Length: 416
Length: 117
Image 1 (tube, rainbow over the protein chains, first blue to last red):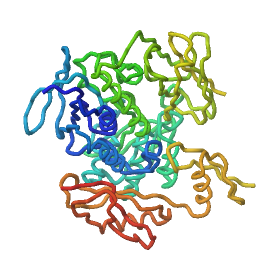
Image 2: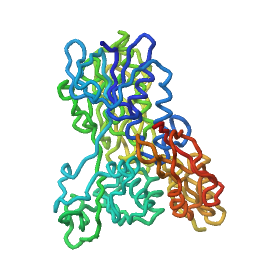
Image 3: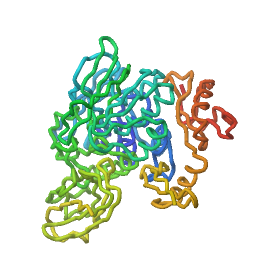
Image 4: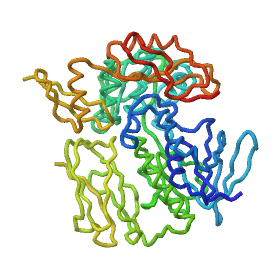
């Protein structure tokens, strides 16, 4: 059967994309590998989701359910417990798909939306030294074991990395009776939301060791001990600063990476910074008809922004299959001073859009600053911001009338 | 006058609040909820509590829950113990009250996941 749009992933991104892609005349399919829609939100049982989107403070499962309810009455097909193993493109997309009921089979689509989320970096990606005992896992794995499967993964816990999942798990493990001895962060600042430092660490007197990393791991069968050390500005361990902790569990919260390996055969352009696809303002990749959104495109800090971005991807995918998405010559969007990345990576001046919405992250933490949007030498817009941090994504909408020409756009941050 | 510096936890924006310890005047907040939080943090700190409880469901082995309102910060561990008494029976619907007036706080324990099997 030929689908108009196949959405891969039934989490916040996929469900939001489906809602906006919907049209009674289109055949839309969501493929989800788990038995229940909702993606990672199902295990994120803490609250704080949905403030921007629903004006409510929801827990993860509630946000997921509300988003799934939004498409429940629409004629959108959902395949659960189904995995996509490969995609190739001739004129249309050919997906190799597997599930228990049908084994391996093929599906065809005019357009595909990548909404596969992200994965957590593991020990092997950060080259942790020392023994390789049991008891070392990603914070998200521990979260799933605890919140979905009902297993406590350990009693004496240390956490490496101050990403939000690590902070959330520091509190969660403490509440369930574990002794969380500390969180070490390589950078001189936390990578998590500031509110999570306050309510997950400070509330429970869990120490945060900034500019620290793990320099040894000891344990035969099960983890027994870890050693942390302070690092200098070049991230080299400083001799004499060793601290030893007797722990049975080490949780890693050391970064998230868009989960797009399954799309290798399509050979679309990937950003070395975000590790996700390079997209234009319609969230279309370098492959026509292939769209990407949510954490599979770039890792977000708030699901509200995942949903909003994915709704746009859904809308543009619909326009693509209906033949109303016009794309002209595209110009680059360049991250300037103090800006780590900007999305979209390319924009189209002649497109029918009234404005282009940019998402960006800074390279540094600053109390105050001004984002400057320039075309060549011309400053076309600026936006003041406070409490700027690499962990907190900024959004800037540039109306078309502000753009002076069909020329590259640079966004930089001036710290004031 | 002494001021207490804190990070607002009401929403993910995380405003940096400064609360006057005598007048309880809050500055640095970007919305009225921040002012309320800053005042409360010095007088009666409260928190939302989220956790999971036992269930007979087969789709997942735990049901996520939240407190229907904020609870006194000092009661968190007492309530965590009380949650062990709950065994949620399917079908569970998000919003179902699983335990009323937990630990005499006037606050209920509410399911946040729906499981039909």
